[in-house]
Length: 112
Image (cartoon, rainbow, N blue to C red):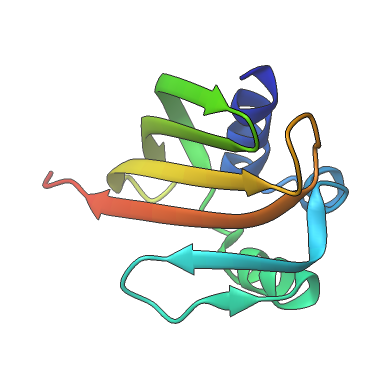
């Protein structure tokens, strides 16, 4: 569970060089409502496009893991003031592995 918290913090702060080591070459990011992003290079490119709006506040409310899957739920405020509730579901290559095979993300923007 500590790894999922660490990954969430790295994602929120867009520390891409640190994150990249955890991605499988064929990683798939299913950002619900958008087309899936497939492959490490495309995933990093998508994150680079988002990195100007970093989280200034992050509250991780719940983390669960079992075997090769993990999930987390939280809330964040971005540098532009927008607020979101989000949940990420991770699938790792195997139980005990730090290599992320896929992530499914649900993101809901909150009203001001």
